[in-house]
Structures are given as structure tokens and as C-alpha cells.
Image 1 (cartoon, one colour):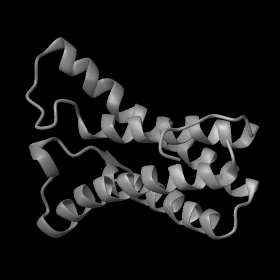
Image 2 (cartoon, rainbow, N blue to C red):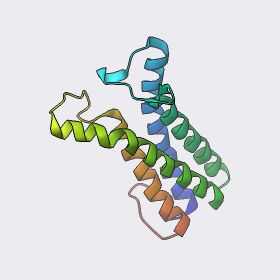
Image 3 (cartoon, rainbow, N blue to C red):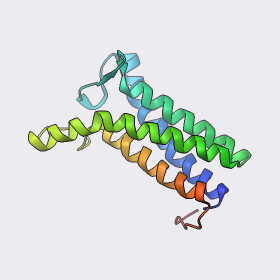
Image 4 (cartoon, helix red, strand yellow):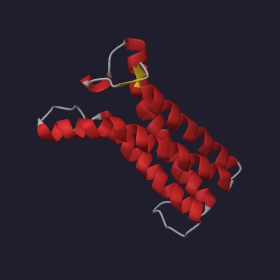
Length: 142
């Protein structure tokens, strides 16, 4: 994947992550309640969505820098942050999905919100692997 295509794809995926996690973090911060009427998992005493927002925002900024001046080192940093995001979101998603399977729970979005963060982190990580390897991968529209 060419660097320009990688940074374009990562820009849109990380923007979606920033908007989603930012929405949840904003509701928690300003209204002191969790979005989508779900339990609000804590990490070191702070809502997990705050950390997800910081990780997506970091990757978003790196993607914007990469669009301006494409450098492979930025792809490495994005892949590292996305890998940390995968580990982080998995820590919260796997137990929730286990509960969902064991006892049918009513989630507003069908799955726990951490699961959607996990999906975005995985997608970003996958495209970053192609960006690192420099293999030609056609992504429709890019």
C-alpha cells in the first residue's frame, strides 16, 4: 500500500474513532453518565472511553501529519498505538461479549461500545501492516 493511500485510509478510520470515542467521553465528562445506557468501565479510576479517545486522537494527529508529509515512521507509530488499542479494548470487550452470550443483554448498539472501538483498532492495525510492508493492496475508493 502506498503511504499516501495508507494515510488517507487511516485518516478516515481514526476520524471515525475520534468522533465515536469523543461522543462517549463528552457525554461522560459533561453529563456524568455513560452513553447508550451502558455500564461505564473504569481504567485506573477513569472511564475507559477517555483512554480510547486519546488513542484515536493520537492516531488521527499522526495521520494528518502523514497526509502532509508521508513518512514510514508514522505508520509504525500508528500501528503501535492501534496494537495498544486492540489490547485495551479487548480487555473490556471480551468479558462483556462473554456476558452477552451467557445472558442476553440489551445493548443500544447491539454490542458493547468497547467492541466497536476494538473493530476500529483492528482495522487500523491491519492497514498499518500493509503500510509497513509496502504491499500493493487496493482499497476501493483510495
